[in-house]
Length: 235
Image (tube, rainbow, N blue to C red; front, side, top):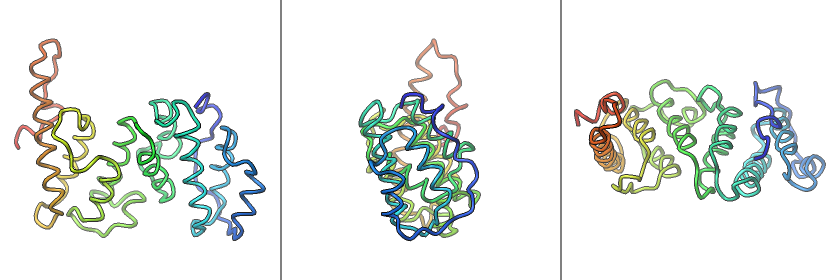
């Protein structure tokens, strides 16, 4: 998106919610031609702060319209690049936490619809599960039972971020994604966790170990693999 950072406001703190029943009327008045410009995106983000979170019609319009513009009408069309991913994080999760369910749904929808998303967005999404488990923070925590196990609901959430069953090919996941999944595993109990999670973690350990081996075999890369994958060495 050209000049996205300059054109879009920060999401900021939520303002007082207004109850707007006729979403169709609002959409026709505020966005008669839909979301077509960065100015429209700035307007819909600002307007969202004034609308009741109970408005399902508005929620669908917000998520679908922003996804369509960000993914399909902005460069590179059909994919997300690092610039647009950085804008999303700065706008909706500047501290790494997505507090609003609507914004979390937007992130999930972008990842699902885009042909490619930078690892930073996938890590952001996975990290919402980690935060929900270890600290009960964020929008995902609000809809999750306080359990130290991975549930079927959690697996459905993960499946919307990474392709499951996870391939054991080396490029299946990036190092940062593997790290978040291992951190999640450290925070949950194996007993009682979903069987698909146990299978996923077996593959995660395999992929992480391969990355360590590859790093150690590169004499020009003077890094200690344990710094990034310390827990894998014990697996």
